[in-house]
Length: 235
Image (tube, rainbow, N blue to C red; front, side, top):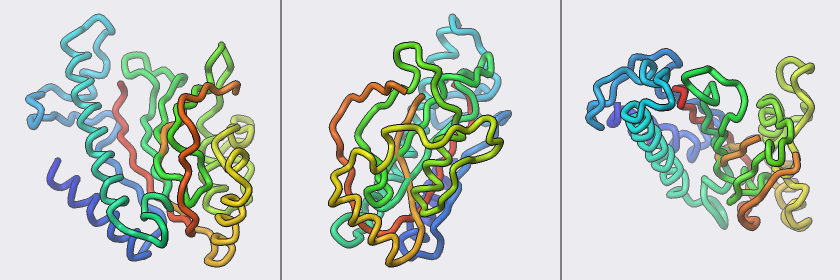
């Protein structure tokens, strides 16, 4: 799996760089996969381990090793995107990459407190370099549909809902252009208008009254492309 995975990521980055596509999905496995990780010395099935109790220290340690491995693959993909120069920045600057899982906790299938990692500013649309907690202070949080609306709007659509409108209240605050300097906002808009919508992404957004940890690092002013990376096993 590691060798094939890297080849797939190489092809994905090259396809975006050549503008052969602007939308990609990379799925390492599926939710009930019996995937093992002999490269890590782990021969138990990932899905089975994800149902281990919180006090099962051995299983939790192995799950952590697996998650670290997936994070390393994600970093590899981002590095490939960053290796392609585009204008004053890189392919990564002009891309949005989403890394997500299906449940917040594997052993009880919780649908709250899900981590989402967004990388790349999508041509200056997203504010990056931050950890945003939408459940801080006891807040109710946001359905993940709201994040998908943000991604759709970053690609140039005028969508205001995604999926069932009953479970979508619009883009979550403080992810997009609203707090980026006006000159960068206009540059990004003008660039998208000149070449049309597109996009590529990556970043981590979790769960209003968000708590931020670092300053604005959004960069890039070119048209957008979109790439999605998904690891589906529960924690």
